[in-house]
Image (cartoon, rainbow, N blue to C red; front, side):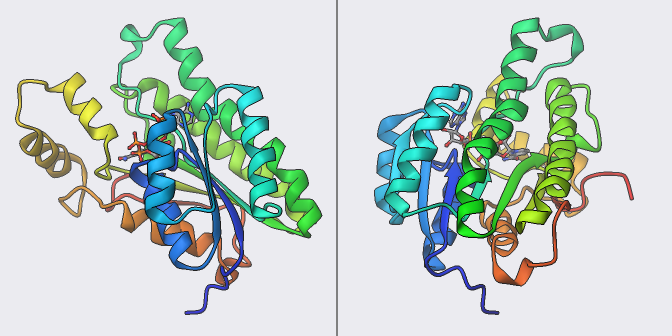
Length: 256
Ligand SMILES: NC(=O)c1ccc[n+]([C@@H]2O[C@H](COP(=O)([O-])OP(=O)(O)OC[C@H]3O[C@@H](n4cnc5c(N)ncnc54)[C@H](OP(=O)(O)O)[C@@H]3O)[C@@H](O)[C@H]2O)c1
């Protein structure tokens, strides 16, 4: 399949590790020019070098100034922007009783406002380029609420609505917006989930148990099983897909 991604200029937030790193790496392998950000300067620079990204910068997507700066500098380094992957984020386990206003506010900043701010900054560049793509990385909990991931469930649902509404608004500009709903994919953030939920249980046993309980395919996913779909959605072969939100979740999600 010819994806036509050579020379495509793509920003990936949260590109220093986990899914963002896998997405950025696969895009570079397809010939795209990639800019990544994350909060840790050392990590983002090291990953940028390791995967051959064109540009890497420390930026916190919950800070509007840093978002503006990252998008502007990336556009300069890449010579414009054709696509944005809103991936930065983290799980925020906790049921309703455990979550304070501050927890809610922070989760909303990461999972909703960051998508809005990064898209707002990147869209003018895509319009100048004559079209573009946005992929929002979310979670199956957006459509299958889990009270033990209460804030994630609520804020990811808002993210899916954002994907759909933005897709409708910018279709006239040739900009396609889609979402990817993740189930359980092994990345560094699972270390945090393990620490918070079952610190006394061996990590592998905890992960196997989570997968056996909730995932019809019976195993955790791999980052490359997500990056393949994101790369496809950014490619020429996905030219008639917009407003979609597609699960990469091994069958998780009891809905039709
Ligand atoms: N893995 C899963 O099973 C799963 C399930 C559902 C949804 N997701 C979503 O998929 C996305 C990627 O998750 P992952 O599993 O790859 O997590 P990860 O391994 O923890 O990686 C997250 C990446 O985002 C960056 N990041 C976090 N907060 C940021 C911020 N405020 N500003 C800029 N960068 C930030 C991290 O770097 P720094 O910490 O240095 O900033 C890192 O590069 C997240 O949005 C996550 O919620 C993942």
